[in-house]
Image (cartoon, rainbow, N blue to C red; front, side):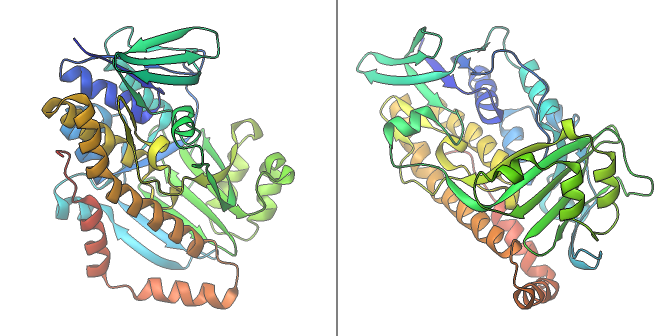
Length: 383
């Protein structure tokens, strides 16, 4: 039986491993982290990700670990509404759960629990790959190596595999930095069924309820790349950056400990035109890392998993890899570009352009929003 190695035990890699095992294929996941730790913050999974998990056959298990929301709002710092979405109405309209939120650690726990025991090998950070007519070889930083018939690189935006195959494909900085955290409680008076994103001058603050009366929040700010002051900023600095922002933003910051805050610059991958390389293929952030402005990074990786698993069911692996590439590259490129452009609009600093932007968003007809969502959520997983 042919065996597949997956580099990277993130959402995309684990989702694909489950999908392949459900189709009777032999798979091993090599993860760089020495041990699994419940780290990370929250994320939202939209209808297209739910549909992908339905295709794989695990949507019920995933959804029951998350939180269904009812409303989403775009706001100004004083709380005035720029845009709003009735999530429940969208669910009814498209016939699939439109959006729910989940802690990354909770999603990872569900995915790990669905894998055959021993599938994931930790402490394996890849430093090199090679292939020949017999298979693929992976070298790890601990001096060991592994062989497989085929390799799927799900090793993230800094993918060792992609950088060896496409040396010019370096991540690009989006122009703004980000802090994230998950609170241990809910501010009194906050609606637990409502998520929001508030657009200020060159800065944004997102509020996303999770299960267990927890709240995932994120904050962005225009800044130079890898700025030491931004790297060091914690609760007190964030209070200053977002001074005057509406409830529950100050309260969430007050509830957050410095050790709960995760910082990173926002980066993506300028779209590439190739995912398949003989016995190797790129998926997820390794192939099409996107900024988080559309909330589609994890969703695209989950779509990849469902699609590649189906391709491997229908075709020989090298043909399946090429089919996957031709089927996915247009959609993922579109998402990366749309998210990049939305981020530039959302991070505007010019007050006149900000007022114009907010006015335009207020005037967008509901039918246009529905059409955009329909385009996003109309997805097939069979190349």
